[in-house]
Length: 438
Image (cartoon, rainbow, N blue to C red):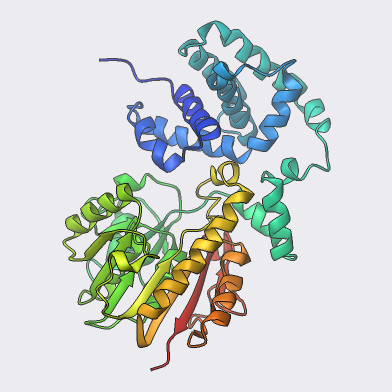
């Protein structure tokens, strides 16, 4: 049996796959975890990756100052190992000597073992000259100052002239773990008492009946009841959908962008007697969603199709409720998925906005008179949110915007409400409610 790989080497290889292959941590972490036998190493892996991705722009500048010439493309893992070491030192994850020795040991276990001395020299130089190196960084560089790409900083400054700096700062803070306790049994308070008996403190959301926040970070996979479906990890902001849909027994409901399925299962928990159609265009995600629904014992008409092309899947019967959890820039969940700040491109936004508009235009005619459509994104860009809804309403005279009933949620916009990242300890999320006259 082979020995587990050093955790910093796994972190560096994972970071290289993000930075140079454009892959997401959600995709990479399961295979990375499989290489680490100790749960403590898996926790350290996540801490190192979060720190390295949050400081990616700063690390790029520091590497330029620390090294006479950049490493060749074939040494990407070695470069990422240095990035991981810099991030560990800056974030204070353990003592500095452990960051250096751990990076050197990882280099010795890598394909570039002969370059372990380079890793040692670069990190030790950073420790010696840290103050001077940081003082030499350009003070007016937006990307260095705010740890975000310039295009996103400028866009946020335009959309949120008062709040933009708070949004950027919120992205750099660690997101708490929110749980959705299955509605009914065992019940949130009983589950909370069970956590307390195991020494895990938690706080219930004052407005959302199923939401529970862990007071300290924990491994969700080891929480009681998670394997049995009694509880699921889901940010509190994402738990608002059932409230806004105004569910009732027997309603025909369309979940138009259904994967991974958290909101869909929540709808069933709140109202089991729904007649649900779910659509998901990504074949892999659709298959995983089907398996999730089967494990939960939920019967759904599941279509692996593009929701914006209803001729391929709709039977012509109108829906009483439609949920569009729209594909978006995900700029509201950067604190939870730090790779977004390096993977998202300005060129991604216009296609996302066009897809959202197409979903609204194609699905609105499928809503029954008197029905309700809830539009949601995990974005903070207004072109994807209230401006998108305003444009749709200008095209569809029958679409009536309704006030979001829980006025505690986020900020009121001309159409809908926007929660900003970290506000009330929740992710950045937008909701709008549209109704069709009876």
